[in-house]
Every structure is written in structure tokens, then in C-alpha cells.
Length: 119
Ligand SMILES: Nc1nc2c(c(=O)[nH]1)N=C([C@H](O)[C@@H](O)CO)CN2
Image (tube, rainbow, N blue to C red; front, side, top):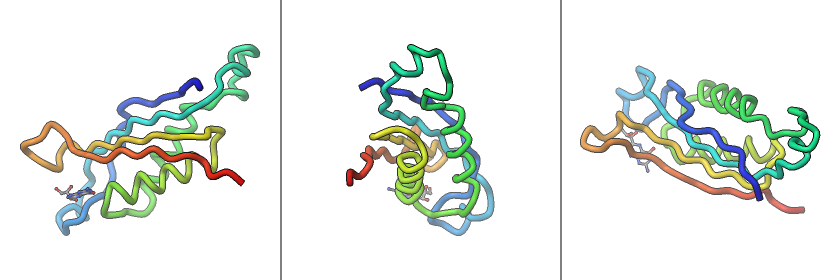
């Protein structure tokens, strides 16, 4: 199937295990890939038939700045659930990077792939 993707979506938010991390925002970067049949949107040239990456981006930013969590794992599981339940995609892969977390590394993070539950 085709994919709609978002690359390096930047969100500043409170995230982390340690006390000092709960006092100031840190940068997270999201790479998101969503399976999508793009043919209906392409054939009709209609945004209403497309998986709108702008709306997904807005929703991710909104959620990240709502209620702080400690782990990247918690955040990406929440986001995968939101994307699969609110948008027309059967599978999402989310990779989140936290570049300031480990000084000796370029970046660190977590990646998950989740599929929509079938009835
Ligand atoms: N697998 C994970 N490991 C770590 C996380 C995390 O969210 N997932 N978080 C931290 C701390 O918050 C760290 O970012 C502070 O430097 C450590 N390990």
C-alpha cells in the first residue's frame, strides 16, 4: 500500500524520568509513516479523500503538549492509538528522537509499528 509520511516533526514538551526534566521543555522529533491508499484522493484531486498530514501533525503536537509523561514509550503508544482511531490508516510507524538525552549520542529514541485492530 502507499504511504503518507511526516518527517522530523519538532515538538517542545515536558518529557522524562528525572526531576530536572519536569522543569523545562525538551525537543522531540517525530518521523511518522502511515499506510494509505492514495488513489481516491489522486483521482479526484480532493484533500477530503486524502490522509491529511497537516491534521495528523496538529494532533500530534496537541497531544504532546497536553499531559506530560515520563517515557518515550508511553508517548508513542498513545500517539499510535490516536492516529489509528482518528485517521483513515490501517498501520502507523512512529519514530521519536530525543537528541538532548544522551550527550555522547547524536540522538536516541524509540520506534514502534502498530496496526488497527480488526473486528
Ligand atoms: N527506553 C527509554 N530509555 C530512557 C528513557 C525513555 O523514555 N525510554 N528516558 C530516559 C530519561 O528521561 C533521559 O531521556 C534523560 O536523559 C532515560 N532512558
